[in-house]
Image (tube, rainbow over all chains, first blue to last red):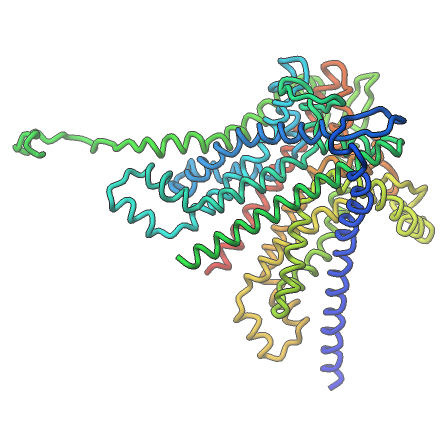
Length: 284
Length: 318
């Protein structure tokens, strides 16, 4: 009797501790969001914040338009490299995924996901910045594209693998060559999944700082020239947060807010696309 | 059609059947090959860039405790120490909390709330590390100094590695922010592993009279052990390579501090801070060699985690 009471007590206590730890885990995560909004939102809604460029401390009206455009250009160039290659690579894994080479491709993609992003920055530096002898936005894009590639490959693979075998078989039965089945039947059917993967990769790349430190480098001026230094939102957060000036710290918080809004929006959008796709697949 | 071929069997081609070339397969395989080639190239280029120090210092670089830009005397130990210690403390904090979260998320019932918490935690994995960094710098570091570090050094300061004087920028603060950052990864993967534990196992243990805790501790967790271990190592890989958030709160001092409440440095953060200012071949190449060490360690850790997660999934699928 006593022993059973003890057992029940232990169980209830353990359950309490586990729920307590969960609540504890949610606190810092909620605080990150809260501070980003409470300190970032006022800064980001400051007049001129989204339309002006950097201004020295003491001159009011500094903005981050150069960094928004810069992040847009750098990530767009990275996407142009990574998404086509990643989608074709993912199709390869889904269509011919059993061979030894496919095993290497899959392993390399999985390992690349966990590669420290700073190492990708060093790689792009050695590859492009060193020979050109100056920083460039395009070298940052190369570093980010390596980061995006494995995400696109693996999500495309799983999106294509979800397509019912009947679709492929009917295409082949009609005498279509394999490439037409794959590109004109399977890929359109898997679009939502592929788009989801691409969006997630874009969101991840847009927030990365380390690969840009010695490639795009950052720029206080408005620049759209991909062969020269270019500003980016994460670089603004990183550099200006560490300065002792309130104005620059506000710029950093405002940029952090813009970045978080962007990333969360893209993530929610991709979830919505994916859920619609799953519902459609279920109705097939 | 067959009329074009001579009908006598003697003229049939001898030897291996002609190979059908699947050009589509070749092209996609070639493009897919970008991933392994990129990985190989990254390591190759880093080795090439680090070659001056690899040849100058040899393996001693890895065990040498000095970092002097003036005398060009470089060793990796302060940074390896910092990376290992911060990641280890982060795992020690995040593992119990992460498993607790995943147990709560994997419980049946109230799916609406659990789903919302799960989605929220997955979204938090998407928040850029620089945002965690700025938050840690302005919010977490002052809080940790006042309410965690100071009380601990006051009461337990006689233990060497818990001694003061404590600082806002320290190993401990960096470990805390790392723990917060890896928690979503750890919890999300563990939740999936725990959910995959066969229902029959839970039900039989409850049918035998086990309480909730006995079922969890003796049946569910042991079954999911390898998967949780894999998730931990995956999180460890992320912690080892994390750069900017750590750089903002670690304090940037290339020494091995006696206490975890004092500033130090990690492999990734010394590269982030010093690479742009590095002058001369040896200094630059020493930093690249640190990057090489980092990438080789994380590659090994990730491979290990991958094998573990794969083998668990394969076992559970039966």
